[in-house]
Length: 424
Image 1 (cartoon, helix red, strand yellow):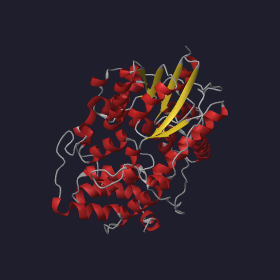
Image 2: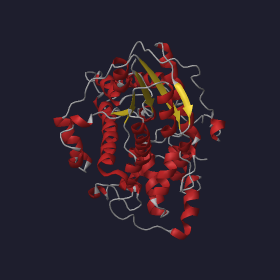
Image 3: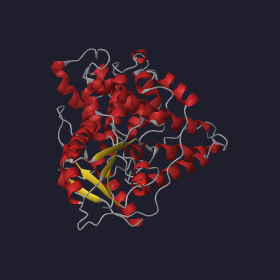
Image 4: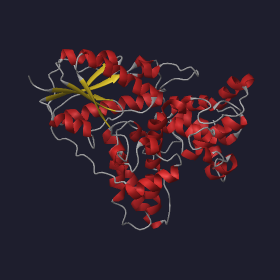
C-alpha cells in the first residue's frame, strides 16, 4: 500500500522553511495538503468581542488562497474544508487511506485543545499525529535549558540564548509535489459567509496588508530596501510591520533573520537589525512562556493580582475605549487606527492598554480580547503575554513598574501629529 501523509496547515501558510512539508514529501508517495476553516474562530467571546474580526479574517483568507496558489505552482493543490478539525481530519484519513497526519504544534489552550481532540480521534483509527515546531526563531531542542527552567525575565532569556544557542538555516521550499487524487478541492468562504463585512482601506494608513507567502516575502524585501536607503541616516529605526505575515506563518522567523542578517555589513543598519531581532526574540519568549506556564496567562489575576477594577462602570468604560470615545486624544487616536487598519505600533498598544487598565479601571482581559478581534497580527502568546505584563500580572513580576503612560505618550506622539492624523 502506498504511503499517504495528510499535511494539516494551520498558522504555517508557506512553502519556505517548512520542515513539516519537506518531511511529508520525502517520506510519502503522495500528500494531502489540507486547510480547515474552523467556524469556532469566528464566534463571539464571553467578553462580547469576536474571536476574529473582519480585517484579520480577510488577511487569513488571502493567506490560504496564497498557499493554494503556491502549491499549484509546484504541481499540487490545497484541500479547503470548513468545519471542526477533530471531525474532518479523521474523515479525510478514512476517505483517502491516509497513513499518517502531520501538523505544527501550537501553545495556547484553544489551539492545543483542538490538537488533542484530533489526536484522540486519530488514535482510535490507529493513525499517528506527528507534531512539528516551526513558529520560533530558536528551536525548542536547541535552547540551553529545558522549558521548565527558562528564565522568567526576558533579558536573562535573551542573554542566554544569544550566547548559548544557534539559529538553524531555513529548509528550502520544495519545487515539486505529488498530491493525492481529489475530485473537489473545495472553495474558501467569503467574509459575508462568516457574517463579516469588508473593511475599506483607510487612506491614512501607509501600508495595505495583503495576506500570503508571496506578499510576505515581497514585504520583507521592501524592508531590506528601506534598510539600505536608511543606511545614510545613522541609527534610524523603521517599523518593519512584518508581524502579520509572521503570525499567519506566511513568513518564517528564521527566513526574516537570515535575510536581514545579509545587511550586517552595510553601515548604519545595525539599529534596524537589532530592532527586528528584538521583536523576533519577544515572539519566541512568549511562546516558550506559554509552553512553560500554560493557561495562567488567560486568568485576570495571572501571576499576581490585577488591581482595581471599576465593576460598576466597566462595560461603559470598555465601550468608550473600544469606540475611541474616551475623550483622551492620543488614546482615541490609537483606537481609531486599530479599528480601521488592524495594526498599531507596540508603543501604541502599550498606551491604549495602560489607559484602559489604570485610568478606566477595566480588567485587562477585556482589552486583550478586543485586540484578539482587531489585530491583523494577533497571536495568542504575544497578545495575552504582553497584556498580562502591562497589567502587572505577567510571569516576570519584577517588570511590574516599567510601564509609564506619560512616557509612552511622549514616545508615540511628541508633537501631537499622531492624535491629529488619527482623530476620528
